[in-house]
Figure 1 (cartoon, rainbow, N blue to C red):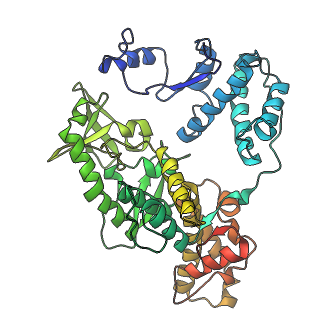
Figure 2 (cartoon, one colour; figure 1 turned 135 degrees about the horizontal axis):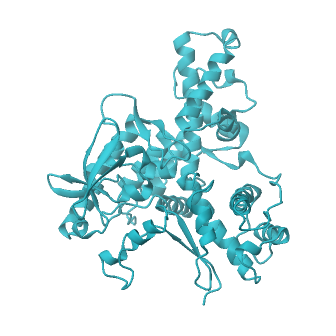
Figure 3 (cartoon, helix red, strand yellow; figure 1 turned 120 degrees about the horizontal axis):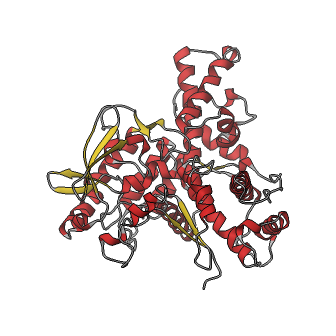
Length: 470
C-alpha cells in the first residue's frame, strides 16, 4: 500500500481493451460514460485504493468543471499533494481542519525540510484551488464547513514576470534551441534533432502571444495560409483557451518558419511513422472528413462510426486524436509532433524551454525564457508598436498626444484582445509592468525604427524588468 494519493484522468490512454492490455477492463470508456464521468475529469485514488464518489461529484459538474482546462490541470495535482499531506497525518480529505491548512501553508512556504518552497504568488494559486474544492464540498454537505480560512498572501509581486528584448530572444532561441554558439557560428557538438520545430514554436509564441496550451495544441488546418501580409489572423478555440476563444495574430516571419518546419522536420517524422505503420495501429484515432464554414468538424472513428463536434470545443485530448488523410496517407492534424511522428503533449514545451535555458547558461549566457515570458514580451512590443502606428496615422505632435489619452487607451484594449484577457486591468498591471509610470512620450515615435527595439532595450536599463542581451 502506498502512502500517497494518485491522480488519473478520464480518457487517458483510450480504451485498454483496444490493445488487450488489462483483462476485465473491457469497454472502459463506455463504463465511464454510464457513471456520468466527463472527458478529462480528474480521478483521485486514496492510498488504500479507494475512489471517493463524493470527490468525483465535486469534479463532475460544479464550479470546478466550469474552470478552463488549464486551470483544472493545475488544480488537480495540488489536491493530490494536500490530500497526501493529510493522509500522512492520519486524516482523510474530508477531515481537514483550519489548522491543517495553516500547517500546510507553513510547510509549503517555510518548511526547513521542504526543498521546493514556494513564493506568495504560487501559494495564492494553491489557496484559491483549495478554497474552490472545499466550498463545493461544503455546499453539497460533504464536509461540515470549508477549512480554508486563510486570506491571500500580501507578498505577491506582479512584477515577478520577465520580458525579453528582441535581441535577447534571438540569442536565446538561436543558441538554446537552434544549437549555435554565442558567436553565431555552428556548434559542431550540437546533437539536437528538433531545432526547426522548437525554434518555430518559440517564434510563434513570441510573435502571437499565445499561451503554451493554445499554441501547443494548434491543428494544421487552423493555421492561416502564408501570403504577403505582415500579420495573419487565426482563432484560438474556447476549449484550449484560458477562458474564451479569441482571435490571435502571427507575424509573417514566424508563420514562414512554421511552414518551413512543416515541409522539413515534420514531414520526415510523418514519413517515418507511416513506414512503421504507427498511425494505422493507434487506438481512438479519428480521421477528419471535413471542417465546414460554421466551424463543425466531421470525422470517422476507427470502427467506422461517424462523429462530429465544434472546432472551438475540441479539448487538447480531442485534438491529439485527430488525423487527416493526404495523398501519401494518414498524418496527425496536430501541428507539433514528436520525432516519432506522434502529437506532442503541449506540457512538454516547458521542459524544452528549460533545456534551452540550461544550454545558454552552460555557454556563459545570462538569457533564459519560458513560454509565459514570450507572451509578456509580445504584449510589450505590441503596445509600443500600436502607439507608434496610431501616432503616424493621426500625425499627432507631442503636445497633441496629451489631448488624445482616450485614443491611446484604445491601444490597451487592442493588446487586451490580442492576449485574450477579460480585464484590461490585468493587461495594464501584470503584463505591461515595465511601462507603468513612464511617460508615453518616452516610448513613442522613432521614425526610423517603427518596431522600437531600442526603446525596449532602454526599458531594460531603466526598469530592470526586461531581459536584454549585451
